[in-house]
Length: 304
Length: 302
Image 1 (cartoon, each protein chain N blue to C red):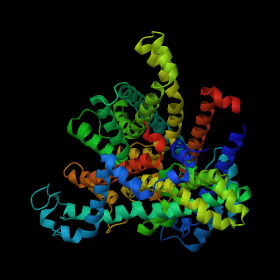
Image 2: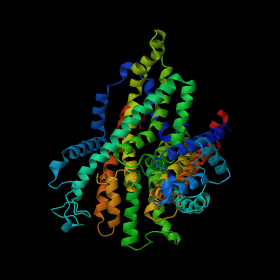
Image 3: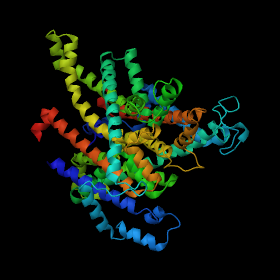
Image 4: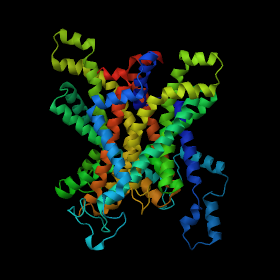
């Protein structure tokens, strides 16, 4: 029942189960090795850090305000004064881009984190308890995953209405299913391991086994999944906002900027292409970082 | 058989979830439908006519029995039966998805194979770069760049619409690029794996030509994951079609769903989403069956 991508991720980590405990390296050591050996992942991490710096320091990096109108300078092409030109209200596109990164990056991180927590808890409980709990939770996941993701997002946004908070909620409700599946199959595997058996035999309660033994061992899988789900969330939000169903003006996300810029595609293409490029860079960086993380956390793939 | 029952169960739950989600939208849909000047009496009468005064489980049962017979109700905004609207839109979406799948399969396949047999060459890097672009660019970005360059700038193809077959070229590429990228990457890594297998060495040692080894022995085994993945890509294609159809003004299912949302047209939205989801479930079912047919090992287990 697992999808291809999920299978790959699960398979990648099954190998670790057989590792001797002493041989496992700490996360910090693995990270350092990844940054040393995988230039692409290192650069991506740098780009991501830079993006977060831009996001935090936006007001200092530009002399224009986010909503400063300048109607005499509408739709100006890129120039020395406006590096990425101006939009239909004469606002500086670079400034809007910097402020828009706040929404777009938040949308990448917050709902992904929430869906990880929700999905991991539900998946682990389903796997550990089994029986009816398992059936109910996993059928629910099946249903959520059966929808074409964009249409499900559209329906939830329709029900809830637009706005940042509802985008968070929508993306969380959409993405917990695949996390739950992976967490469940990890749990099923760990449940049979000797140390869980040992913990159970000395009378450790179910909840404590989940908390102390199973969740920590799912963590590497979940970290990789997190890095790979962030770009997916950014893409979904941008598509929703592009359709006018996501973030509502006057706040700006990159997707919404593409949407408003689309009307001026032929006279002012930079309005749409600049935020599109920003989305692409963000998505690429997170994907490279995720691939890099998977490579170091999974010894079997490193061999190739 | 077990898979079929499971698929039907998921479909039933999908329709239930969809039904509930669309019923908890605040506001009376009839009041929205009738505009500001309708009096309470008319609103009540129409509410009763549409069956919206019934308890929700009765409404759901009615909807379900109708849907099984192909009756998804009547669109509020367009005044036509939803099934009829879906029917005419489906043809365009089908054409678009088929063209996109064809593009994805052919370019993805060729790029993947070439990249694998010339591993680490310039061609390999180039093709994999293109695949990565396809995977990381939002569909609307690809669509708008293609539209800008080839339709607006070079005038090679129409900007939008479905007037002749050439207007499907850009939407198909925009929609299929993402899948093409995934397929190319998948074929490349599968082929690289297989080329190191012992039976390939045997085939080579027998003195078979390079092409024979590649096509008769290696490529066949990459078909398995590829075919499954292509069927699973179907869901992604339908999601992407929403954006592609909007940008290129193609009257397909995705655009219909967007129109339904903008007109707050619940029956139309419900019908399009349910129909698309049913297609995806069917796609997954076919993928499962194909896998069993193509891989004798799973057949024995089952």
